[in-house]
Image 1 (tube, rainbow, N blue to C red):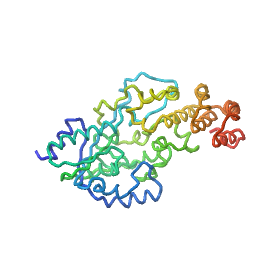
Image 2: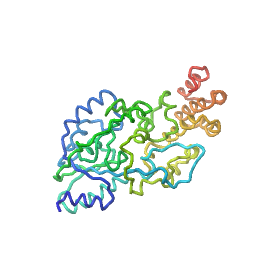
Image 3: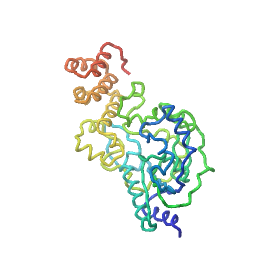
Image 4: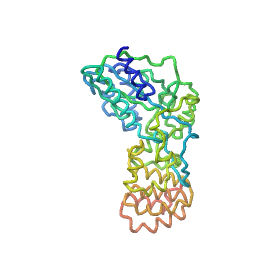
Length: 376
């Protein structure tokens, strides 16, 4: 058994669903694509800024010779979830945030692989990444035969669909690369394009990250007024394009227990989230993929979800936030109250106007009170 076969065998032993191998570039075919996307302003802002680092693995590991790509499924039928929480006001967490943070889980798997390889190969060097590395993980997954691209730019595997987390390891080991799945292609049904609520999927394989709800909900900047109603009750991530994808029918479910909801339901209690202490927030979200955006961003998203509920029973929970010490929270609370009940909102906002000291918040208050902003 050669080293590659041993690595594959060990990956199965430690619970990795899929593993593939590719060379260490440079990936000149990717350079123009990244340059064009950057010039068009279609990047999310979370990517590595230096394109050279994104196309040449040797810029990260000088002796890079091959890249190991792993994938793990995170799909399970919602009907099989055991959670009995059904809060009156709840926010939807996308599947990526149902269980333990995938960054932690996959990095543990990659380190498990590294420990094994180090015993088999003298002078082993590596750099491992999960979602935060300089290279384009989906591009690597495609090159390594993990899956093919869908119209929504997701990587689709024949057995697990697009519900897979990706991670990779740049190594100094010469390993034979796998072939991309050139005989497999997206069905081209256009369902992901038609159902994307913000038209972020502009066409086949044409994706604008700035329009994507998943990206918008992760950003700390203000959400545009046009997008607020579209968010609905989502507080982290968006699964719409994957939910409608026919490639995700009759797929294998995950086997990793780490991705099952524990302590935090996939239906997050919005009122609890608004009132959570820092300690409780860290307990709930410390090892959850949604936790990295921070308490304020998740509370902002919870306020948006309450505003979109248009339920007047939410007003008592929103009212105290008009005096929150964070101006951004006060701003979005004003929007939420007006979206629920403009008349009540006008009275509440009038009551706090004289005590408001933030220039931007005052401007929003006056625009609403003067009728310059609509209620939805």
